[in-house]
Amino acid sequence: MKTVDVLFEETGKTVEDIAELTDLEDSRVEAIALGRWTPSPVERVKIAEAFGVSADEVSWGHTMDPRNVRYRRFGLKEDF
Image (cartoon, rainbow, N blue to C red; front, side, top):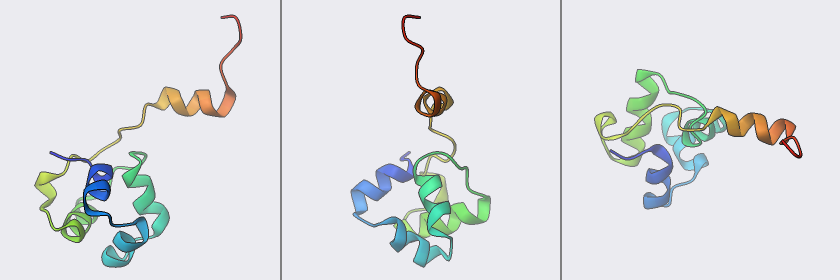
């Protein structure tokens, strides 16, 4: 199974390409590609078809470590 970000790399398609093919907003497609958003079943089918694969061939879901979000937002404490 491949993730959406891997499909972007392999196909060379852009967020805008997939957004246009799926009739989804660019920001939603980007969030899905970055692993910040889990698409609905309908969105999964649309996105998979835009890449030319079936929805069953894609690993869907959150892939971003939530700890990284907090560290980027607030920084790490010094000398901890």
